[in-house]
Structure formats: C-alpha cells, structure tokens
Image (cartoon, rainbow, N blue to C red; front, side, top):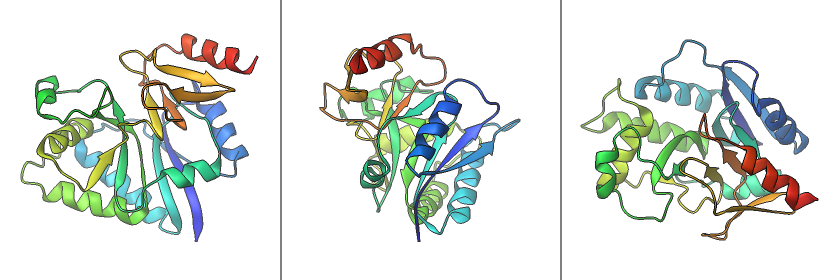
Length: 220
C-alpha cells in the first residue's frame, strides 16, 4: 500500500500553489490536482468530490484534501503521516463561525480554533467514505447547504464521527488574526497551544505579508 496523497482543488495556477507543490514533492509526497472550474461547493458536491477521491486513492493509507492557491506546507512526510488520524476525518479549524455565526454559542469551547474550516481535511480513504455516509444519513442533511456550515451544526450537536484540529497540530488557518503564530528556524509554531502545524491556510483572502516576514526573519 502507498502512504499518503495530497489532493488540491485548483481553478488556475496562482498564489502559493507552485511553491506548495514543490515542497510536497520534495518530501516524496504524491500530489494530485483537481480542477474546480464551474463547481459550487454545496454539501452534496463536496461529498461527491470526497467520495470520488477516496475511491480513486483507496490504495493509499492516508488522503489529505486541500484548497489550492492559498495553502503552504511546512514539514516532512513522516510528520504528516504521524499527524493524520486513522479512525476519523480531521477538518481544519478556524476562529470564524461561517456562514452561521448565530450558532457559535452552541459549539463547545476548544480555544480560539473551535469552528470548522472546509479548506483542509485528512484521514484514511475508508474514514472519508464512512463520514460521507453518516452526513447524508443525518435528519437535517441538506444537499444545497454549505459544507462548512453543516459541519459546524454537527459540532454543536456533539457529533463524534469527525473531529477538528482545534490545537492546530496539522492545520493553521489565518483568518481573524494570527499574532500567536511564530516561525522558529523556518517552521510555524502556535504559541498558544505549543504546536507545530504543517499546513498554513490563508483562507482565500487573508494577507500573508506578515507571515512571510516572520518566516524570513526566522531563517536569517
């Protein structure tokens, strides 16, 4: 069995995509690029996409699904493999409860990163397929809803068939500020949770000048 594959959703080559591919490939990590031109990210579309990738890469031990142009990898292949759970899919976490901020009080307090971010998720192919089946079986399942929003509703209910990376052990999302993020010898470090996230996600539009200034200063 092969070890790990990272599948990235892309509409065009821009941002950090080329550098991210270079970093992953230099670690011997298989990279798969998926075109998302013209696709809307409803919950139903996201689940169809996940299912297709899980079946396509069933000969891999681990699968990581990622946004394309606004994500950058820091770390090693061994660290990545060690960070992915086997029994459940882990989703990235962020500080923003989107698109339904009204439900935020019902979501348990896990620290600043307590809400779902749909841009990064990881697990085994089997755990992805099991998660899709459980989501579709939920009585409130709505195929037209936003994937990230529905997963936040599941968090509020206490669902345990998936988890979020609230400690940023694997993923770090920049939205709503990131003063707690430092770089130590070129590696990102979360000073709140004392974790070393392997993927930095700029959440589509978040400025990265400060990020790269910190990075450059740490390797000077």
